[in-house]
Image (cartoon, rainbow, N blue to C red; front, side, top):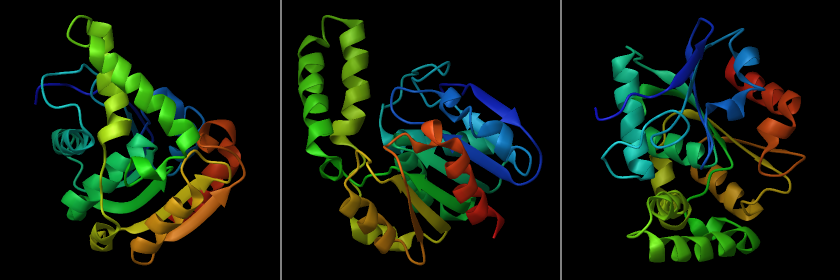
Length: 226
């Protein structure tokens, strides 16, 4: 593997892997790590090119990040794990569950989207403008190139068809905020497309885990503990 993930590890029991969103790092889950580690063996990762994990040489895509996760699990002898992903982290978890179904126990998708059309236009338009500007200067500026790669994740990925989600075998919780940047009908489409999934909306925006950790943690633990 061309990178070594930076990660925080805490607790014992069944493995629970936390995957942060675009441009963030594992510290996003500071309100979850200690709580979840009382019942689970928590691994909070920095994704490729995020936080303290190096960029490496491989493609900067959601599908590559899913393959990175497989290598992380293999390297730490994790045969099967619960996956909790937020935003792009949820998209990584979703792709991983499709590609490697036998490696997923339970799946929690917080603020996932199948394609850029699932994001409210008030959020997506500035992202697309920023991506075009960064792309224009990417050849001359390392910072612009890195910015273009990061924004590109939200412009070009993950592109999953709703029908594909019928192949997910893991028991799944789809969770989002009532005022999320992901369209409500899009979140409902994801939940309806995954067989037997549960759907929860919590009061708040896209960042419910960070802003309302008690309510978020309660919903996740009720799902995992059942």
